[in-house]
Image (tube, rainbow, N blue to C red; front, side, top):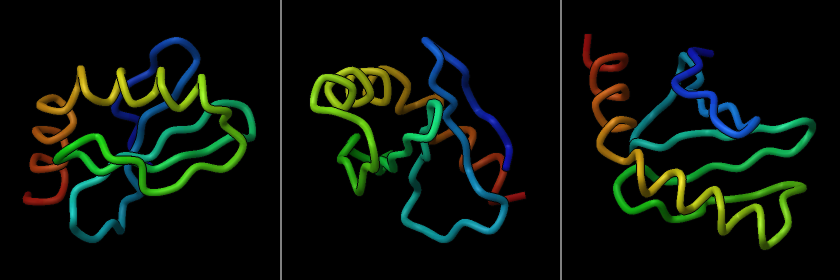
Length: 77
């Protein structure tokens, strides 16, 4: 599970056996979420409240290019 980014206590990561479409997982404490990288769309969330999701969507949106580059680098090698 390569960690891609740590920010504000959130860990953004991929699992090593991921399948398309490109996406990023997020966890903090026992909470978890998954976002599509193409458009920062929430796929699922467990434990995060609406305020957390808003902040996560903003962070994912700000890092879409970075996440996409890391996805391509990791899974296309």
